[in-house]
Amino acid sequence: MSTSFRRKVAAVTFAVLGLSLAGGGIAIAQPSAKAPQETVQPAARGTNAQPPVTAESARTAKAALKANSTLVASTTIVVVNSNGTRARGTGTVIKYGTGQYEVIFGRNVTAGVFVATIGRADACCIPPAGEISVAPRLSTPNAVFVQTRTSAGTPTDLGFHLVVHLA
Image (tube, rainbow, N blue to C red; front, side):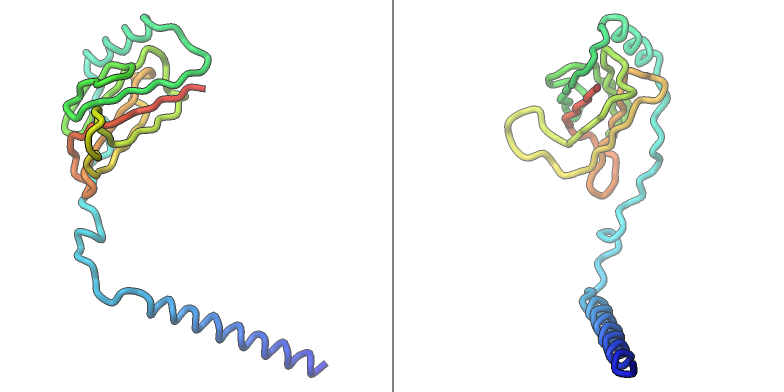
């Protein structure tokens, strides 16, 4: 019994020693030089609130719903230029402010899946780096709200591609 106990003690000792060395190795592997603060923490994001729905937006959304029939399952795409004009695809685009866009569709999209990426409308060049967020448009069941920002988090006008899938 004492031999079994000694083996267990030895195994536990080696395990503790191994974990201690591994933990110390991780601590040593951390870079000693601190990165500049602006690269560690992006700029303040500001508010994530959507601007209020305008009368024009509400009127356009209602007209689009009346004009289109409901589909069982569909995928809709739209490519939008940085100035808020639609390059191709389906939907009406309204630009609210710097980096703020609303895309209105002819059917209810609240139960849809929204995928957006920064992109250009032409076949030239790689788009600028940045970030994009997409969400259902508040108080408008047939619209999607899109925000674009620089990589530092500053709102900026960027072209984008949006896919809305309804199942």
